Length: 160
Image: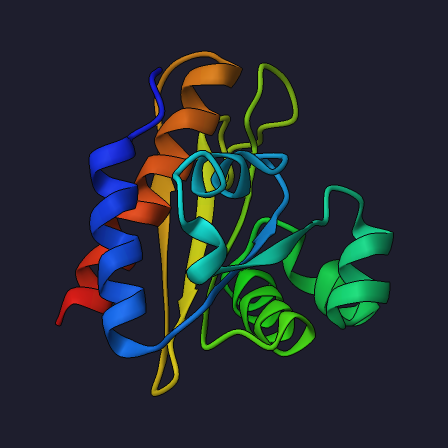
């Protein structure tokens, strides 16, 4: 998949217009959202940075996800991505954030969380939104679809 430069350009323009900065907390996408963001010239005006929290220990230690939360809900859950989004915004001194955690495959899925299940959270100054998706395809496709959805939805929220 090509980097969605037009989408990122619009997102950046809207973030700059609002005077906001973005941070990312990524698990299953392994930094793809941040990579795409920094592929756009001028992104230093609106992208603060991110944390790749692939291991649960990183989610706990850097993003404040409680061990009990991980035990009760699992890493791929609404409460975990919402916690990640709020924490990375604080850590990076950002106005808004996206956080993703999912099962990219090919293994690791379950009946409750099949391969392709991804939770995404969007933290804005006034609210936190989150949604569960089930994407199709191989590991790369799931990662690409997840990153694209995170950015498309964020651009919609920021544009409003």
